Length: 412
Image 1 (cartoon, rainbow, N blue to C red):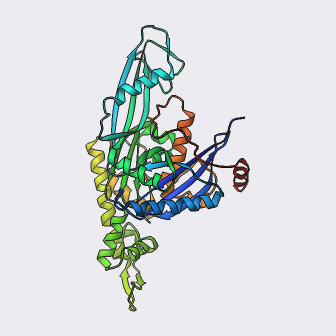
Image 2: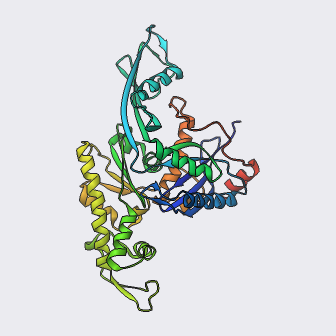
Image 3: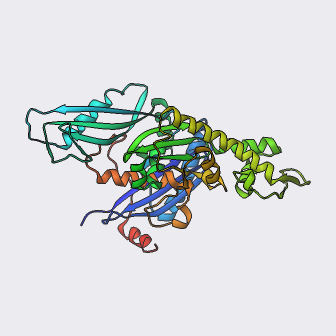
């Protein structure tokens, strides 16, 4: 009987830091058995600006996760995002002396090494080397050629990179909080893993994860990742627009946005919202149409930026599966309708799937990245042919007792 696998995911976002403890059982089911969350301080637009504040936020989220499980977290899989993310599509091939060579994992490793050598430099850290497809003997397209015969093999890879300093700074603050970083998962890859269905990837689909600090785009076609990009405009910009227009604090504007915000003026019923700004005894009256107008203007800007990028990269007419919106901003009422009007294609709201436990709390767009990290790592463990990027030494992920795992799983 195989051992159960424990994976701890840490999503350090601009607005919140989330820690999820996942248990993958022998049937390959993912159970969420631990949850921790804290407000993030010290990050703006996905960039660390006050490291000590970020460290404190991480510790708070870890403490909460440990309290839900009663065990000590020692290591995590962490997310990495921001506009320092870059991607490349590269291909390489190997010709064998024998016409009946059995393809091994070593051959696949050599292929990926040759591909990554084209993009490796001291200014960038390679986060992912994701195989898109392999072609045997210039004829047969396969997903996993291990064990098959061939005289020649060509591999196509999607390589995700991040600025080395950005990568090192994030790793430093996480480890300064007392945990080891075993691996990184890029935000757009994680979110897509959580919300997409295989048929969407085949048809061609764009995932748009709108968080607090950045908007992440991932494009899939023919079943594999094709392109990622991050835009430094997102939910916090909407909040600040509201704050400036109605002369509110950032906190008051955020509360107003969440409680009453909508994304389309034409679908919004006119009402007067009464709030008491901090330090004032007189109420402030805000027209719901003016609030919707503020939100619609900024969201339209974000969608226009993405649409322009899709047009430039010649993806707009290839995403037959439409657009999937996720991230915290995807909870905005009528955002689907606004996106459909701008992109002129089908749009759906993406929520994390394929897990058990804490469903009422985390089956929401704002947890797509955290859940997706667990699913991505689970899938990569099961896929021996996937080239790995080693970001840390081999250390135990979680000090966890079998009895506790079973107790927690029995709750779900």
